[in-house]
Length: 121
Image 1: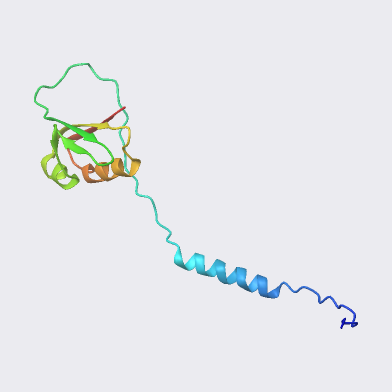
Image 2: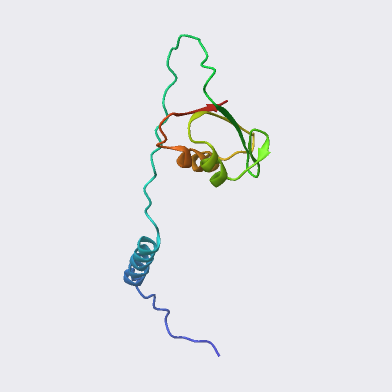
C-alpha cells in the first residue's frame, strides 16, 4: 500500500554542528602542547690572520642519524660533553643526520668558555 501523506521537509538546524565544532576546538586546544623553541647562539666566522695556534686541542665529531663518533671512536652525546671542555670541535654531518640531532649536540656544548664549535658542510 502506498503512503499517500505528503512529504514534509524539515528545516535543517546548524546548532548541533556548531556545538560539535566548538567541542572539538576546545579538545584540541587543551590537549596540544605549546612549546617554545630553545635558542642556540652560533658565532659567525670572522676574518682572521691565517695563523694556526698549535696548542689548541681539536676534536672531530661525525654525526649521523644512528652514528656518532668522536675522533673515529664510537661515542654518546653525554660522553662527548664530558670529554670536550676546551679547544675546537669540528662537526661533520652525514647525509642522514637530522637537524634535531645536531641541535642536541650543540645544546650540550653550549656555554663553555674556550670551546669553538665549527659545523662543516
